[in-house]
Amino acid sequence: MFLIVGLGNPGREYANTRHNIGFRVIDQLSEIHQIPLNQKKHKAIYGSGYIEGVKVILAQPQTYMNLSGESVRELADFYKIPPEDILIVFDDISLDVGQLRIRKKGSAGGHNGIKSIIAHLGTQEFSRVKVGVGEKPEGWDLADYVLGAFPKELSGTVSESIKNAAEACKCILTDDISTAMNRFNAKKK
Image (tube, rainbow, N blue to C red; front, top):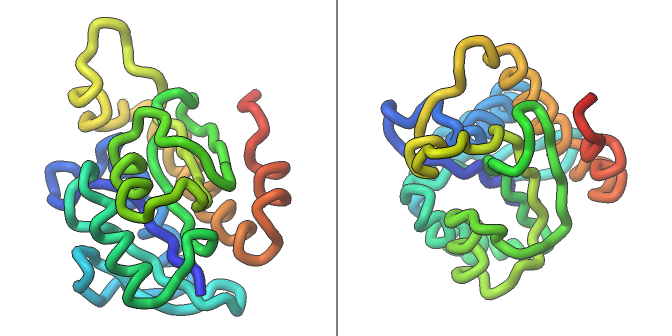
């Protein structure tokens, strides 16, 4: 069983922000694979089902970004899912909008949601799908930037990157992470 967690913040006011792209990828996976997000426990909204025959739990922590590790830990403990079977999907400001970067493990890279997950799991050994949201413009506050919405002219690129991130998650489950890295980590042309 795999646990796929999209990071974001609960509440309508955050729905279309850069920081909530992880939630949007989970919504996409839920819709494509008909896995309803109909349970609310473990500080998350989640659902379980199958993606191409692989049992998964899709989750959106409801703790706010900086405390995401609380929910991930509770879900992992309850369902007895080891860190190597956890996949986290989240925003990355070091990648252009539309770009993906898949990693098997690694540091938090300054992302507070990932810092929280590393602290609660006690390891960096979990997979990630980073979804590019673009670099913060000079002079902007980082929080204001990631909690802001994408400009309308990028909506097509954002939708495409959400579809690609969902496809990358499926590829990790059905093939392996190396295949997904080779396929999705390509630089945007």
